[in-house]
Length: 153
Figure 1 (cartoon, rainbow, N blue to C red):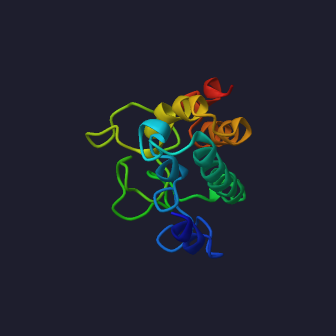
Figure 2: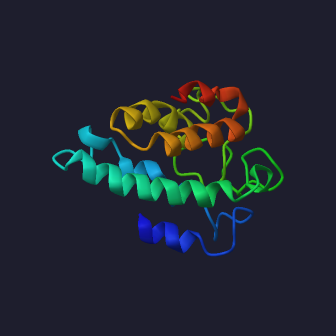
Figure 3: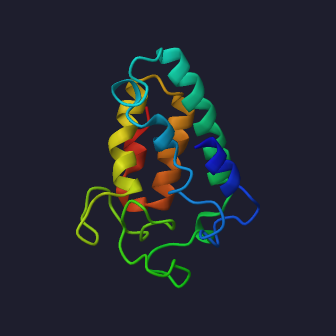
């Protein structure tokens, strides 16, 4: 994941997610992936926290460096060709009015919904409160109808 994030942070930015920074190819949720009940099961919480905190901090620094209006987004003129529904493997952002847990293209499997469900678990695993709150704040900016600020602890 770290190598993938390094390759995506290549100066192209988010205006061309075929070559630049994307949610799909650098997601901090892939590094965390269920925490102590997932990929970190059997690993000390301190190790999990150190690795995930470092990755999430870097991811948030990079992600928030881009103006939210610069991102390619489903349903807008700069959308990625073929990304017509909010699904898990899309590279652009879902439509601005997307609300986590709602069906898009027959599925709710996507970054906004997965993040909504995982943030409380990340908090329970002791992932850095500041970084998790930054993630919630950024998601609320990306999806204002999603009420992500309610996840801030």
